[in-house]
Length: 182
Ligand code: FNR
Image (tube, rainbow, N blue to C red; front, side, top):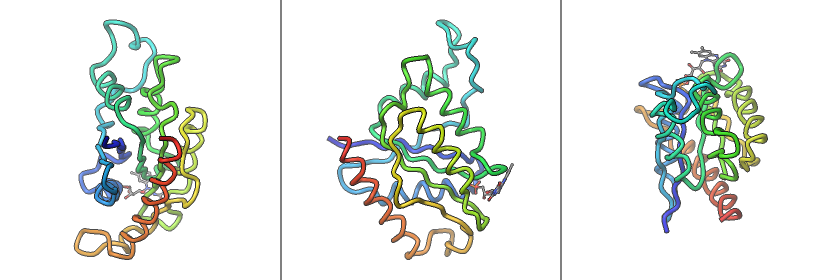
């Protein structure tokens, strides 16, 4: 049966490099796997007062269902002020509740940070990893995926072949890692 990887993109920008990287990674998944972009930009900020019957925002319910249905997760994060953007943190919080029903638990993950800067989103990448430890999300440790100076890696609006080869190597390692949990 086809395994589905839920793909979360932390940038809401139309021309997002993270989105482009996410789409490229999806295209590199092997047979038997599919990638599914999961929208996180429409999630109201987490508020415990709303997490009761009759008040739960529709977007939270939709997101939790979509997350529960996937077998693994890819995160593509920009770095905002040396951390992950609020979109991703909010998605982590929404998916982690109601208490005891976290949709994240045990889903093998890959974290990719993409930045126009040379520091490559390291701060975002590791702040995100910190939350994933608590959420019991086994996360590929090596190879790490820091995509810095991203504009140098593009040609005609797409990633150059040597970068795609690097993405393919990371994908292969992730699939190997994923299969350990299957
Ligand atoms: C940034 N950017 C940024 N870059 C970085 O390397 N470290 C940082 O701490 C920050 N901080 C930051 C804060 C805010 C509020 C914005 C809007 C931007 C730049 C950011 O990485 C760059 O805009 C990327 O292109 C964002 O990724 P997308 O939107 O192209 O996917």
